[in-house]
Amino acid sequence: MKLKRGDEVIVVKGKDRGKKGKIEKVLIKENMVLVPGVNLYKRHYKSRTQTKPSEIIEITKPLPIGNVAIICPNCHKETRIGYKIDNKEKVRICRKCNKKI
Image 1 (cartoon, rainbow, N blue to C red):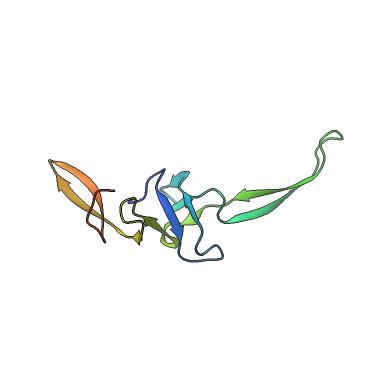
Image 2 (cartoon, helix red, strand yellow; image 1 turned 90 degrees about the vertical axis):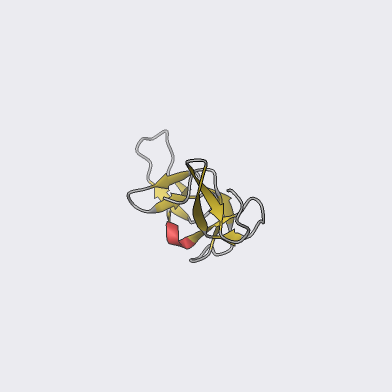
């Protein structure tokens, strides 16, 4: 998995194309990421008791990894991630500026 929690991403496909945000959660088995404020849907909740009213809430649904691209913290461009072995340690690098992410 090339994306990690806390990475800043931009949506490149779908209804929220162009929106930016930080990854809150990575769902590895489903190949999806959760970005708050992106891919919002409304959910209708029916009241279960007399005291709690019915309501409509907005929930954030996960996005497929292919629909987002990481934003490099150095060059501030959307990019792909590469890997480099540096002092026996594998580090992520930006494909555009070749600096450590």
